[in-house]
Image: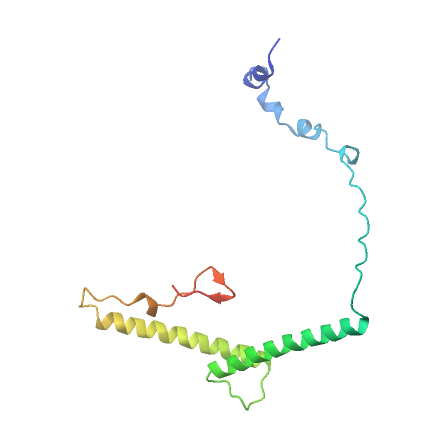
Length: 151
């Protein structure tokens, strides 16, 4: 009698051409639902005892939403201060702010590349000169707090 380990080693009795035929694949038993372990039905969550009245809950919601809107508005105001194409007194939508900010960032990147190229050309004869790493900005793949890191 063959030991279980020998069954896997002895390939002499296998007909390799028919071993993997469509019929042999189809004859493999597929698991049925009866083989599955049925999960226990979940108990409904117990209702939390709300220590606040409905009016207090509503007021909390309104105040937290107001704070969120103020933060968003302050962020847009900061973008308006940073991007030269945006003016404080002009009527502006979020889309206008995004488009002008994208345009400005693209301009800054091109300007950075141009200045870097000029600096390399001026210092190409000086073998000891190296551009300080804190002046070279590259967008990294990892972001921290939603902001690109400076290498």
